[in-house]
Amino acid sequence: LNRWGRLAGKSPGIEFSLSYADGSSGPVDIELIRDGRVILAETGRVPVEKTFIDPDPPKAPSFYRLQIKDRKQTVIYSNPICYTSEAS
Image 1 (spheres, rainbow, N blue to C red):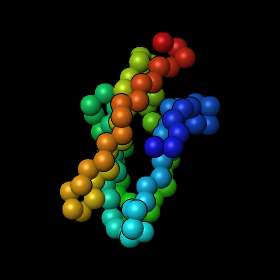
Image 2: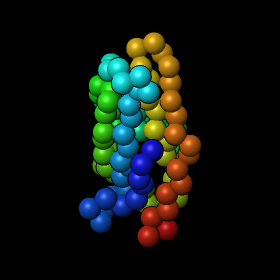
Image 3: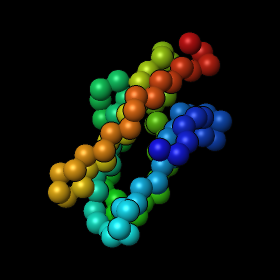
Image 4: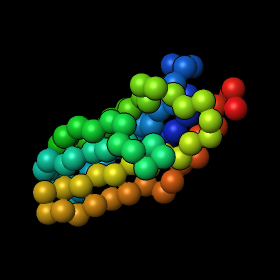
């Protein structure tokens, strides 16, 4: 997990990169979860660099989590990320 914050000055976003230690490549499923609900999902290929921007920014404090799963069913979760909007 590389960076979290307001991207483009408007919506909360998350920027991350992922690679395998042995330099190999492979498909992964990537999900951005807000308050227990998947809000963005896509398939990528390791190594991967992505930026997700929340399309519907929360007005109240929220928790985000990033989940990445490979084809061997290995799952990586980020630690919970607390977001508080300027309006809350």
